[in-house]
Image (cartoon, rainbow, N blue to C red):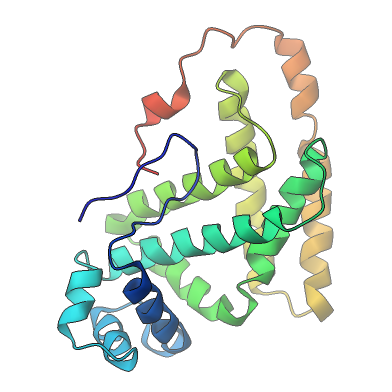
Length: 223
């Protein structure tokens, strides 16, 4: 199955069978906490969505790995759509980053256990490359939506740093029982305050990274 591509960083959903994929994913998510991300779940979800069992293979030829990848892409897409609707100025980079992470997690509050199961599945050795690509897509999409288009040394430092913040915040959120997940948002704000020293690092490094090649070509990650 071919994937649509774009010059813009961020998740790009394949148009082929897109509506069918979304219906199957919607049908699967309530059962993931009980059944896990399994091939049986995928087939059952296709049938629950009103398709025959063969649609599971047509929509997700890679099986549950494709379903997991689509879940991550859809979560990113919803995050970006929600962020675009927020009245946060383009110059408020920190606020846009915090808002993106918060919107992403708040939008998936009903699927926390499905996400927990997804993390467990992606921790298995065969799925680690999928997990890393998914994390990269999410972090790159957040930075791009925040107005960062840099391709110098800061490209690497910003994404590595934000990946750590996001992963830690996600871990906190999964077990947060406070009202409105207040504990998570306090944690996120504290971590972002800690890493805003990236700007000072950029000034100290000066023009060191000006001649760096575009990292998207080096990483060769399909978006």
